[in-house]
Image 1 (cartoon, rainbow, N blue to C red):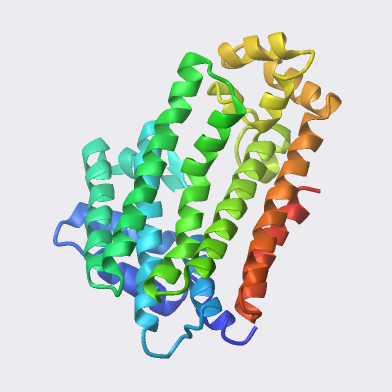
Image 2: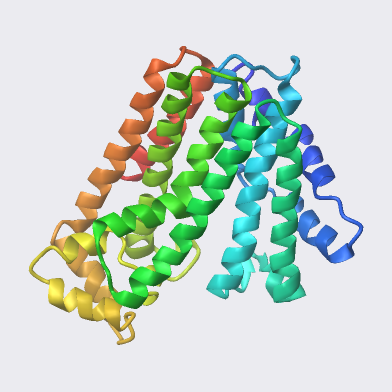
Length: 324
C-alpha cells in the first residue's frame, strides 16, 4: 500500500506532535501525557483521519499534511480526554494493563488533565484551515459523547430498555468519534458535501458495528480472549443488543429481572448467555453487525478509488469477518 503504510500510526511524526501538544510545566499533567504517548495503542481513530485525507487527495510530505496530522492529534486528544473521564466514572483500576490515571494521581488531577487535553485541542483547531467548522464539529461530537455516557446510566437507572436508547448510547460511546475522525479531514480540505457525508456515514456505521461487536463479545466471548470477565455489561444493568432481542421474546420477564438485579445471583450471566444462543439473539446481533459494516463499505463507493479507500473498507470488512 504505497502511501498508506507511510502514515500508519503510531509513527514518529504523529507521536512527536502529540507529545509536543501535551507538553506542560506541571509535572502531573506531563506524566499523564507521557503515559498517553507511551501507551501507544492502535491509534485507529487518527489512522482513519489520515486515510480519509488521502482519499480526498492529501498526501504525506506535501503542503498541508501537517494540518492533517494536527486533525489526527485533535481526534486522539478528544478520545483520550473521554477515557480519562470514563475511567473515573467506571471506577476502573487499569487502562491498557497499567493503573488508571485517577488511581495514580487522584480524581482532581485526572479530570483536570482531561480538560487540559480538551483545551489544547481547541488551540490546535483555532489555527487550522476551516477552524470554525472544525470547532463546531468537535464541539458537537463532544456533546454527543457526554449525552451518550449519561444516557447509558439513565437507561440502567430507570430500566428504560429500548433499541432507540441503545443505538443512541453506542453512537455516543463510540460511533460519534469515529464519524468525526472520518469526516473532519473533509472540513479541513474543503471537500464537497457529498464526500464529507460519505466519510461521515462510513465512520458512523463502522463505529456502530465495532461497538456492537464489543458488546456481543462481552456476553458471548471468552475471558481469555477479551481480557476481562464476561457479562460485565449485564452486571452494570446495560441492555446491549443481544439482551434487547431477548427482551422481545418469550423469556422477556426472566431476562428483565436479571438485568434489574444486575446479574447478582450466581448463574445469572450463564443463563442469559445460554438463552441468547438458544433463542438466536447472538446470531441476530451478528447479522446486524454485518449489515452495519456493509453500509460502511458501501458509503465509500461514491469516493474516488484509491489504496486509502481500500484500507478504510478493510477496517469495516474486518468487523464482518469478526462477526462470523
